[in-house]
Length: 78
Image (cartoon, rainbow, N blue to C red; front, side, top):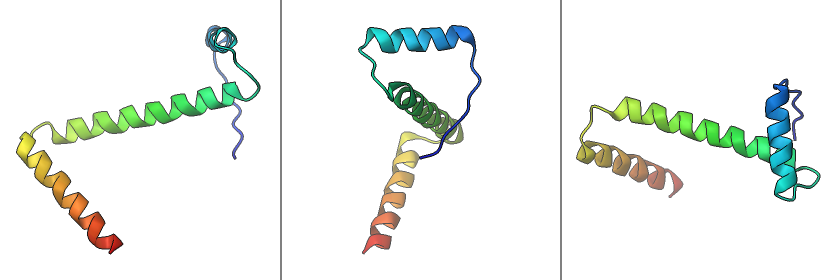
């Protein structure tokens, strides 16, 4: 595990800690909350990047690219 030192606004700190307290937060929940939030942010940023990159493609072209990628991965695992 890695430790981070973060600087966030007092309002955000109060909001997160209040939320965790209302939902029965225990020791370690703040770290889990931040970890989940970061993972979600990375997921959505990646998804938006893929949408932008593929916006000019038809659904069948996107499906063909996905099928090709799956085939390559399966072949590399055989």
